[in-house]
Image (cartoon, rainbow, N blue to C red; front, side, top):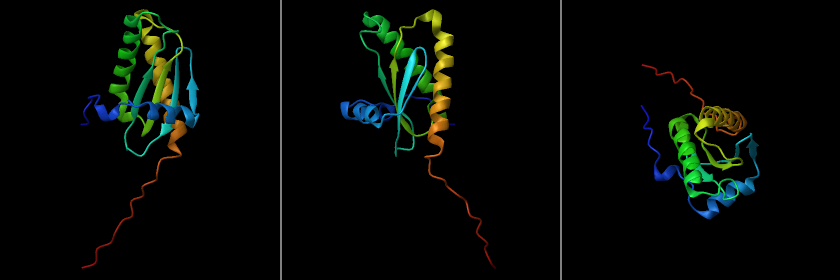
Length: 132
């Protein structure tokens, strides 16, 4: 069973990594969230979060939103195609909106998986006959 830890390898940290995803110019938006994505060669999904001061002035609110999104990613990370994701919060959400945010996150990830499915390498298994 795969581990559900959110490791350092699964994080987008450097400015260049974020810029690369934004410059790839693939985005899916919903009411609260916008997901920018770019296929990667790591073999697993990586996450970067952007919660601006325009969305929520108080750091407590921004940190709550980051924490919730990080948890959603942590639980689903093995079901996501190998892409770099930058999730940008477009509208402030609070504890009352939790279920709606979870549904929105899952539907956006589903859309990303569908759009990147065609770009995944196809691995075919060829049966080998062993002669005795």
